[in-house]
Amino acid sequence: MPQLSTDTLLALDRAHVWHPYGPMPGTVTPYVVESASGVRLRLAAPAAGGHRELVDGMSSWWAAIHGYGHPVLDEAVREQLGRMSHVMFGGLTHEPAVRLAATLVEITPEPLRHVFLADSGSVAVEVAMKMCLQYWQSVGRPEKRRLLTWRGGYHGDTFHPMSVCDPQGGMHHLWGGVLPHQLFAAEPPAGFDAPLDDEYVRAFEELMERHADELAAVIVEPVVQGAGGMRFHSPGYLRMLRELCDRHGVLLVFDEIATGFGRSGALFAADHAGVSPDVMCLGKSLTGGYLTMAATLCTAEVADGISRGEMPVLAHGPTFMGNPLAAAVANASIELLLGQDWATEVKRIEAGLLTGLADTAALPGVKDVRVLGAIGVVQLDHPVDMVAATEAAAREGVWLRPFRDLIYTMPPFVTGDEDVARIAAAVTAAAVAG
Image (cartoon, rainbow, N blue to C red; front, side, top):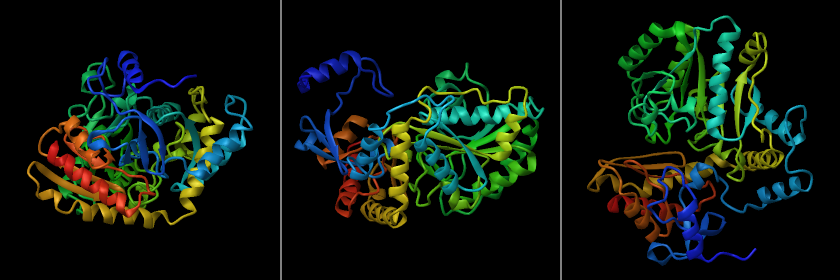
């Protein structure tokens, strides 16, 4: 098939392609990526500043932790493609999926024992919520059908996950009248190293105690609230949640889709607190950014409870559940991650971002600067001018995707020191322009 010219491709894109979180037709012309290698995106035409290559400061929405075109991951896909690209998972199984499930059980906190493979993060959260609701129905407590979370969260774009996203500051407030009505506590006090706020703990416990009889689960993003605001909170609040859920007979769900596989400096954000949820959601970095796949893990107690119910099955089955290609590259990605000193690499990136962003807090219009693991965030005191900020980063030779009042980066773990410094400079330039 002949290759389209850049002008033709962009014209067709504008006419037919609906991009995420955008209008139709689009109002901002996207950059056309021809190829990607290492931590660089190769463009079909120069971006602002004349750069044909941009350092990817986003890991393709936090997923490509090993960068692009990694030989180990490429080979895993090629090898699996020679066997089978896909086979239905109902009534059949295969080694890549079984091996992946066993590995996830091994590396996640005890006592998570069972793995449901899904095809996106939102679906993983849907499955987690369905597990919790069905568990209580199966054990004779159907009145426990609401979920509690804290404000500032984001859990996906499908309907039940939207119901536990921030109902006011989040992007899904339009649907408030048709979504299930969940319970929301105040957002956790900010600061990874901050001491616990006793008043916040008391208020949260009072809210849970008042509604314990109707609560199926508490669901939160542990330590890092992602697309809801890129906020960090103390791991101590996770220990608080575990204690309160145990005390009041409520399940605990950790959405680790963004934080799993080392992003925050621990393999899983739950590890910062030394606690385990009853249900955990994984995605994004699961396959190293190669193919879409997610997973929902649960304890034996949750699975056994569902199996004792009137309908003893979890009635959920994505067509591409357990896809062999995705499972094979996920196995390779996890093995690649754990086979190296990933924690030192993440710490190195953290140090580079701290150094590179050290003076940014003093800039006009900057409200806060925060870094945790391979995450760097500059928060403005006004909504960001996304076009101006993106172009400013591109002039520095870096791809960033600002949103709301935030300019942030989550680079691949293989990003070298010079490129980390370049990313930090681009974040600063974007903050000035935005």
